[in-house]
Image 1: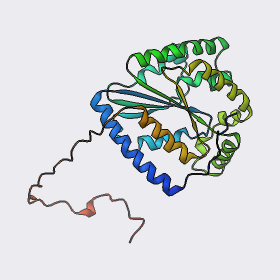
Image 2: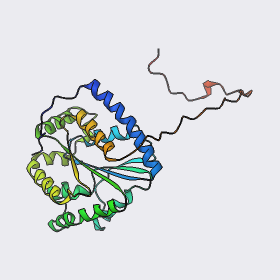
Image 3: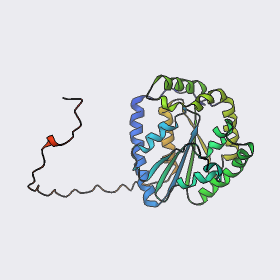
Image 4: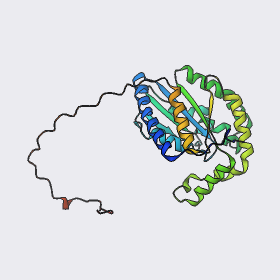
Length: 268
């Protein structure tokens, strides 16, 4: 089972917000470095449903330039994609020079939900376990920085988060019929994860486990590890100097009454 190694008290909100602000500033510095050096960075986020993957991804991309940092969260494969080489649908999303790509679930779907829920055959599953390490070694040999994070959540905490999603209409979209079905397959998912690790936790691209019962700790721990995994320097460009604005020309603008203005709902 996915149990935290050590039960720690939940990180205080004030400390979390201060540390997150500092780490997000460092992420911006990292992105400047990645862009300047032409690095290609791939970060995979895997784990059980409601383990907190989406939360940390949101905090990572929040301060970054979306032109060079993007999230890949693929839906179920189409009929055509099901006939392709398995890794083919993921390859087009790999980064070019200067880009960071974050996979919210990845090619490891085959070793998890597809296998446990019977969406692939035993032969396809075994072929994935043989091929995946070689695929990832090719990525690393090509110069890609590949980081893989598994978010580990306890049975009790996952159930609490599921209940919160049921009760909150704003979060209900996060809970799918597949998630509900996975509740009854806790042991099967544990076995699949352990076998996947035994094949795919390779020296060239090791798996890193993030204990995620405390979402705040998980976020700052994961972001800190990402920053520690890339040797970057502060090359923040100097601030631009704004030239004086030109004097305003004589111009009579149309009356405001002719515009369609969004009404003020919160007047002073």
